[in-house]
Amino acid sequence: MFKRRFAIKTILVTVVLAAFGLGGIAAQSSLQQKVDVEFPFIAAGQELPAGSYRLTTAKNKAGELEVLLHGKSTETHVPVITRLAPIHRSIGSVELVFDTTDGKRILSEVWLPTFDGFLVNASKGEHKHEVVSETSAN
Image 1 (tube, rainbow, N blue to C red):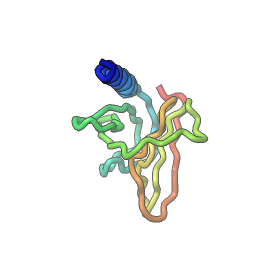
Image 2 (image 1 turned 90 degrees about the vertical axis):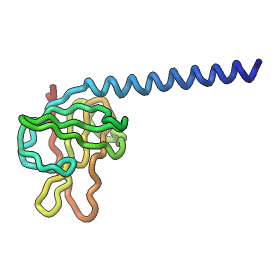
Image 3 (image 1 turned 30 degrees about the vertical axis):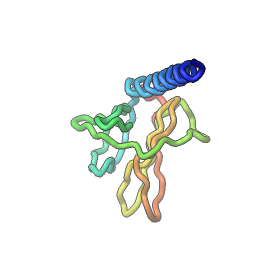
């Protein structure tokens, strides 16, 4: 009897924790932020033009988190490698971090207000960081 009650409690706790975790992802998927990028760049292996982009998060068919970049005539799905802790970051602004190497700018980090950051590319070798920030991003 004790083992059965313990098993039921364990299952209940697991279900509740899973529901909170999925709720966080669902809340993120409705988040939309706007940022203007003044130069062409590469994201998820695709060359994208300078312009205004709307950012959202969602899960792909495999259940993996990704950042969606909605441009004027494009929608680019950028897989998230890992989440980043927002140490020394303002939670009130959108920031895109680009790795600049060999004259190309590659999207490497996405920071959204009140959320963790997302690592979307890890450049190997020597590179510089360039940050695009949008404080009034809605």
